[in-house]
Length: 83
Image (cartoon, rainbow, N blue to C red):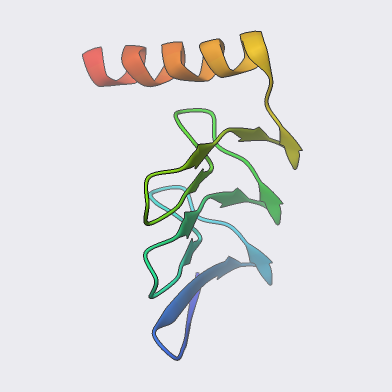
């Protein structure tokens, strides 16, 4: 894993791609956070983007999640928290 810090913005790369299993792959100094897996914005256990103001976006494999996909992500998060 390579960690790059540019003006307090932190980027986590694995094999040259944005990717991190245990947290956001991009953490901007502004507070915005992005989760990536193998270079794609993606997160199955919660929102893949959280802004400093609290805005949340759900993404799966570089595609913004819709309706039932969001419900499934929230369900997965809850199940993980219970285990």
